[in-house]
Length: 539
Ligand code: PHE
Image 1 (cartoon, rainbow, N blue to C red):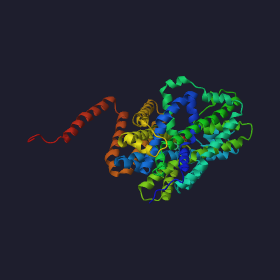
Image 2: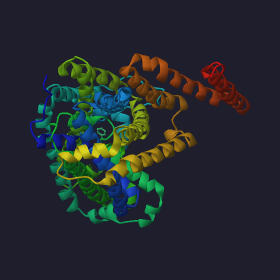
Image 3: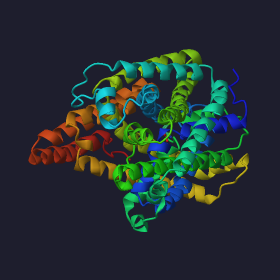
Image 4: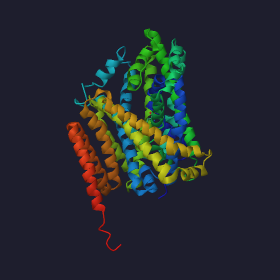
């Protein structure tokens, strides 16, 4: 059967931009920039964009187009045994969409509440207590929050409606969902710029603090933000590019997508900081005391600022949550599309059935996050998926293309039909720079993780929602590739890892050394003896 195709190049590029431009552009970039040197952050950010973001985007587009398949099959075509890397990417992405959809469910709820500015004056309490009904900790789930479940149904209904009909419909929908949030953001920039205090806000956003450039964490933040923001390492761009014609451009499309995404992030910073500057002006506090990032910005700080607007605050509230919904929806369905493409390429199941099946599973899984303790779990899963899943997959991808497929060969392939030709610098980035940076990011996060448990959550919750989920994703990834590899390799490896961790936790150091030394020495001896052939008589 002929593979589906995008209706136009524009449809493909817009869909890719739609995936990259998401909630993160509004609630993550401006805050990360402000924290890491303001205007000076743009230097590491742009360096990260050109040395890792665009090279990896070229890699994903190129792989998808070359193999004409979603991530698992694409990696299997590189080498049979590597299929699990593709599944791993898909599973990390699938985990993310399960809670991403819940965040969008909150947006639906707030779209409604903005009509009455229900949070007025007490946005924080309204969000945590009235809206989420937050429990005391991850151990207390305490029942579903019905309004959030309703929002979740709306989100999944939209996703299914779009994805089940294939990339042709995706291509039509993104013609609306990509420009719309940009136009809406522009409304906020214009409104914000004409308010008193706006300049103060912008000063915070853009005044360069060059001393931050000497701190490694600034650079890690820049690379982390670039990977997350470009939606890399979840198999999305591989899936989208697999519906490109075999002779389509790769490199220039990667430049366009990446620059459009980062341009939107930068622009969103103006919408955020002018309005926060105004708020600081009204409440008479310095801007530094009112800024925030993440869900706190979207559901507490910005809504508070909006309710202080001199004219029609409810309208601006409504527009703001409409912006978030239109930003999020194309990121959400791109994650589902990646999974549907993977399943549909691998098994004889129709796209429609695959969409319903996967969406059903993700919806049911999402119910966990709609409980009163859901926010805690969302936070834990999000932290681990981004710090280890994303980084791990990115590392694997660059090593595989750099060394197994061969960076130079791959570059020649993508250069053939591309409007912009890449030089040897690309090989260097994919073979050395990107893996090195991702490796450092991983080690750095691990060191922090063991130094102090994330956000002070109880150990068991981090084990289940963090480490457990990672192990599950990898094992399931291997199992989807082959049952035998799962039974013979990943299951025993994970079991020993778990056993080792348990030992580390409960045994006194003396016993640990005893076990490790004995295992290495005597186990090693047994292994080498078992491999030895009989004597040399007659040689
Ligand atoms: N890139 C999106 C953002 O910036 C987030 C995202 C990550 C979306 C991964 C899909 C997949 O918000």
